[in-house]
Every structure is written in C-alpha cells, then in structure tokens.
Length: 124
Image 1 (cartoon, rainbow, N blue to C red):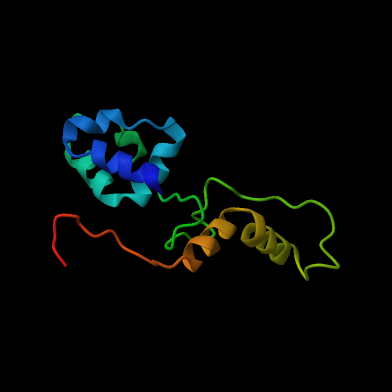
Image 2: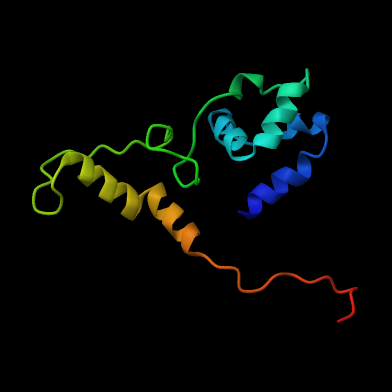
C-alpha cells in the first residue's frame, strides 16, 4: 500500500499527471482505485492518460470489485473438479479465494489497526 502514497504525493498538481510511473495497462486499475486522480485527469486538458479513464476494471481485491469487473485475472481451471468442489464455478471461486486476488482481499479485510502515528510536537 506504501507505493500508492508515493503516487498521491506525486499527483498533487495537474502537471504531475504526466509522471504516473506505471505500465500503460495498469493505469485504468490505478484510476479505478483512486477516483479523485481520475477526475483530475478528466478535468485537465493536458492529461496524457485520458484513454485509460472510465474503464470499469479492478484487480480483484478492492471492496467494490465484482466478478465481472476483475479484468486482470480470470482463472481457468482445466480438468475435473469432482472431489474438492461441486461445480466448475465453485472450483474457480475456491482458486480465486485461496490463491489469487481474493486471497489478498481476504487478508486485507482481516487486518486491524493496532496503533496510529502521533505527532511528536504535540504534548500529551
């Protein structure tokens, strides 16, 4: 998650939209995860990433990502699923939740904040 903080720091001005340092096919995913940055690009005439706006794509771990929006990873499970799942759809769902971005989503959802940073200059 730290790399997103770096992007947000870089993207403080419209001129900085040029500096998104991602492969072109990742930019729609970035804009979907950071809609404010996408809005800024949409408003800014000189934004070079307009072709990547308004695409409903996601990695699969985001809260608002449905199965039809998962554009980056669509697992294919050849072979028989009998013995460990009832249907082919269930086989794909098990794979997704145990070893793909569904695993990342479940892990992120299980995380809890234990401590928060506190400014050093504030007296207690």
